[in-house]
Length: 267
Length: 138
Image (cartoon, rainbow over all chains, first blue to last red; front, side, top):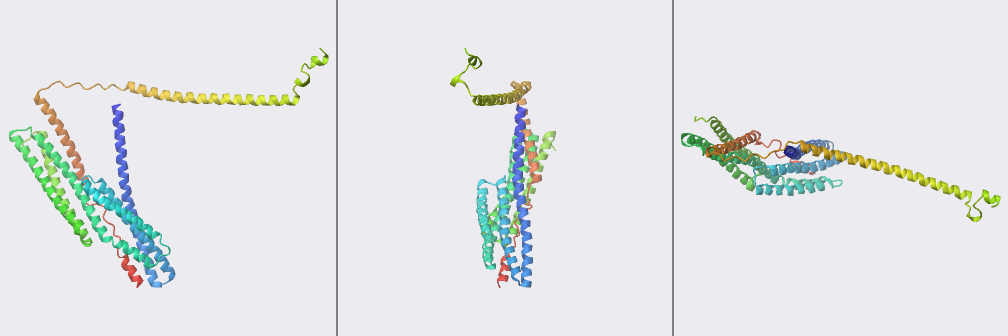
C-alpha cells in the first residue's frame, strides 16, 4: 500500500511538473509566434507604403492604411505576449523575494491590460485615416522608452534571482560541512576547516558581485535611459557571470573536500 | 326449462352483445401483452443490475484479496541503545548523505542556470513607424 501511495505521489508530481512546463512553453512559443507575425506585417506595410509613394493611387492608400492598422494592433499584441512571458518567468523565479516579484508583476499586469485595450481601440477603427493611425501610434510609442527600461530591469532581476538561488544552496552546503567537520580534531580537523573556509570566502565574493549587480539594476530602473538600457543590462550580465564563476569555484572546493573526507586523506 | 333457455341460459338484458364481447377480448389481450412486456423489462433490468453487482463484487473482492496478499510491513525494530561513538557515526553518515544530495542538486543547477535569457530579450518593435507616418502626412 505504501508503494502504491509513493507511485501515486510520483505520478502527481510528474504531472504537476509537466503542467508547469507546458504553461511556460505556451508563453514562450506564443511570444515567438506573435513576434514573427509582427515582422511579416511590418514588411507588408513597408511594401505597400513604397507602392503608394510610387503610384499615389487611392487603392494603394486604402491598402496601406488597412495594413498599418493591422500592424499597430500586432505591435501591441507582440508587446503584450512579451510581458506575459516576463510575468511568468518572474513568478517562477526561485531566488527573488516576494516584494521584488510583486512589484514588477503588478507593473506587467497593468501594462498587459493597457495593451489589450489599446489593441481593441486600434481594431475597432473603421476606415481609419493616416492621421487617426498616427495618433494611436504616438500613444504607443510614448511608452516605448519605459517599456525598454522595465524589460531590461526585469531581465536583470531574473538573472539575479537565478544567481541567488545557487548561492543559497552553496551557503547551506557550507553550514552542513561545518557541522560535519566539527567531529574531526587536530590536524585533520584544521585541514578540512581550511577547505570550508575557502568555499565560504568564494561564496562571499560571489554575493558581493551580485550585490553590485543589484545596485546597477536599481539605478537602471530609477534613472536609466532607454538608449543605454541594453548596455547597462550587458554590464549587469557580466557581473552576474563573474558571480557565477565564483560560485563554481566554491562548489569545486566543496566537492573536493567531500572526496577527501570520503577517502579520509589529509592532502 | 324451455329449449330456448337450455341453449341460451343468459337471457334478456343480462346477455352480452357479440360486439362488446369481442372488444373485451381485445382489451384483455392488450393487457396480457403489456404484462408480458413489463415482465420482460423487469427481467432484463434485474439481469443488468445483477451483472453490475457482480462486477462491483468482483472489483471489491479483487481489491480485498490484493490487500490481503500484500506483504505486511512490519514496524522497524526499535533500535537498542548503542555506544555513543556509533551513534555519532550514524548521525554523521546521514549528514554526509544530505550534503551529497545537496551537492548533486547544486551541480545540476549550475549546469542549467540561465544567465543569457535566451529568446526572452525585448522585441525590436520598430518604433520609427511614427517617422514613416510623419513623412506620409507631409
